[in-house]
Image 1 (cartoon, rainbow, N blue to C red):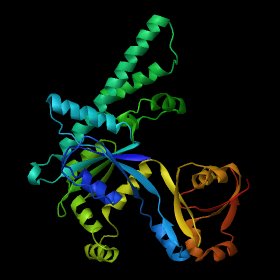
Image 2: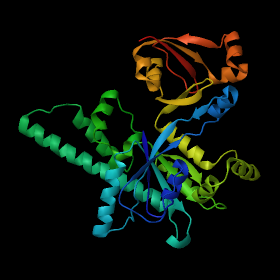
Image 3: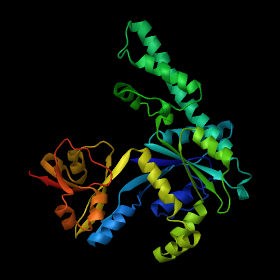
Image 4: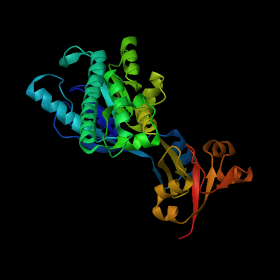
Length: 351
């Protein structure tokens, strides 16, 4: 799963990308190619399990982040080329996170509300062009051949057109399974999960009008200061903890952003634990136990017999796995079991 950091130039995208992935790419230099790197998903539950089991290593869940080249948003040939490149790269990711500049400085006065509204319109218009082109082709094919390959497609595209002409994203629509299958190949930008990241100065607030514009875009909203997040990332774990404690903050703000992306992608974590490794594994919400087994190794899914499952809260309340078993908090589940976020699972299998 990939999340694309998108937005205009000089919004702090690359700074934030470095913080999330532990990178060190130079900022403010532009570029035409997207940059992919992976960052782990902070999880206090895994930290607690690590303290309980004291494993040789701890492995967090991970998400891939793409720093999509920004564009100036201007007119003319250069602006058009930048916009085309941006849209091309943005279509290839699974979710979008727009970084919005809520500070002034050397790049001129900020207009966060305008950034949010203008990019939302850019995405809507790009999708509308695809829908109109497809409708035109469907109508011509029907006139020429007297039939269409799938009678459900034209009504769906007309529904999409109505939504987009109203300036609303496709993600707001409720689709049937058949509708979703029909539309997935088009990689519509406004159907992708969306997060808006309001990048502001340490002592400022984005403002109620900006927050309202972000919420109006139908997106999850995260507010942070990328500069402070970058400074925190340079500190040792002890220094960072002391800084956060002095500020009265539980964790760096980028952790909230990562979890927002994780949730937007409909992902959840389950855990495997033991003296060698405590690890968070990623599955889609609604996944069954054999799918979770396959996330660990294909042999476990192929030879799945049962899953030994303990709820995270049950384990913490018991104090250790032996006590959880004594309290009958460890149960055996079959192939139909739907994995819950935070489950601690051991797979029984035979191949």
